[in-house]
Length: 95
Image (cartoon, rainbow, N blue to C red):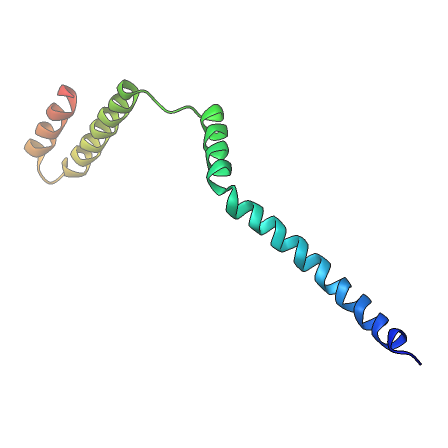
């Protein structure tokens, strides 16, 4: 038996184990190097699907949520303190 007959099965077994590891390391390196580009592309795709609201839309949503919160607080305080509930409702109506 020569050295090649003994080494060949071990080399084939090593190659079978090394190829997937090499492929995973190459893909990982590509993701590491191009991470900023991939992140930018992902954010651009998200903006295409769901565009950002304008400043006026965000302000209107904040106002609506404030009004709903004040009305909810007024409903909770209605049985305990009717004057406080009325005041909360008037504040909510002004917004």
